[in-house]
Image (cartoon, rainbow, N blue to C red; front, side):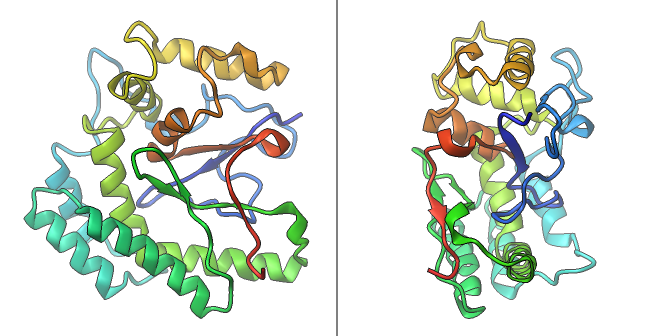
Length: 251
């Protein structure tokens, strides 16, 4: 039984799992969630020889600026934001970050949906909202909504979001996203420095087996904890126990 549904969030070339998806590269269809395998392609490093996404934020910004998606043409607005980030040592300004997310919302409004209420965490990191289960969309509506969400996010937001999140939650630019999450816990004062990635993974495995949220050494619903996870590309939908806002795309 799936106790918490994983979804991939906030990645430049990652799979985007949006409000109509059950899971995207995480647990689905009855498999127990396990962070030991989730995002395995990003977990090839160790504390002794950590692999990096890039040598610096500026290098990452240049990569994203030069990157051409085969399916979605990046908007001129986001391209200009990335150029400004390159000129600023790879740092995305708060104004550009907010503008990128506002462009995502406006794109959906232009396609006929109600503007989504973004999830906003204590330090200002944004995330996509969960779908409201009471919306009861048809299969055709759900399919079109997913296509439109992916389009809007890919065209207006995804690359700026990637850079901004790295600066907040993974300034060491680790490819190991789970280590980056734990490091973020330490940096934000959410967990003691003695808390390790190995303990984090073990607790997620136990939760996947039992569904008991008390196995964690932290409150999994804490918004600071979830901010570190979201900014490192991991979100969890806890179903009826969740406390994040939901979105009815047609009101």
